[in-house]
Length: 360
Image 1 (cartoon, helix red, strand yellow):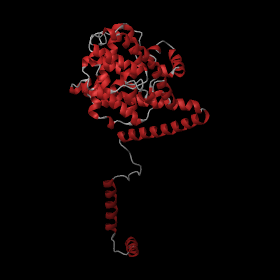
Image 2 (cartoon, rainbow, N blue to C red):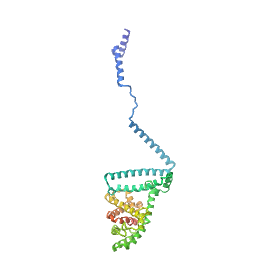
Image 3 (cartoon, rainbow, N blue to C red):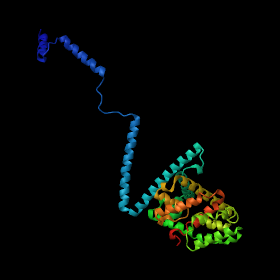
Image 4 (spheres, rainbow, N blue to C red):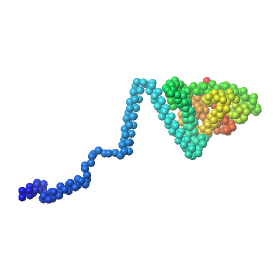
């Protein structure tokens, strides 16, 4: 009786009539529901292994950027001159790596679709040409750094002789202008020598009219007059056969032409002839691709680089003048046949020597 009264009193306090049996039943139901839902879940989320790896990589990259930024600021404050060289070197590595990836994509596309070099677009062709030249220069540094501890000497040599050992990616803006001027001065030294060789072979030309045209051309250049396009094209037959054909050039003449093309002249005559042929053929292919693209589609830097490759010191000439000169070059180049490429080779001297008073 006492127990039942207590249960009824509790039910009255809770506001509902509950029997002792129903109270026990509720406790059992509550226990079953807890077991059905399981233990309370932790508020902490567990990521998948892939998400963990991504978050770890993101964390490492963020920390690396922070540390790298602090290192750059430290160098900039305490070693400003070294910081300039360090920045140029790192940017040069990035540009060279980007060039390598682009060259690989172009070569892969050539192999996949069986495309020849001369079938590429102008920019792809020019990129491969420049990248091959840069790799050749870098290979020399790699070879001389092979002996043990020679890499320390190589770094010193690169610092002392950046023009000879480094490619343009690792030059400062001032060095780019100065070094291009130096290279042009070196190739310009051979211009008068090449004109002298042309004057010497005039008596060997069988056609009297061609003798007169070539003599007039040499006289105009020596007097500082820039030749017209039709004056140069009038000499096409002179450069097909003996004595000015590509296969009939004398050794000393080829050495002078090699210096004008910034190629080493210290090779046997067969190698000199082969290198001159190869360089001239590549420029001829570039000219045909550029004629399809149009000079107007080139950027200012591309125009200046194209002019410099063809013999004009474009670093100190206005962009519109460079475009005009490049248009004249293309008119001559696209008219010539493969057998007349010797004239294109000599055009490096004929068309560039006196353009806008560049003869100094």
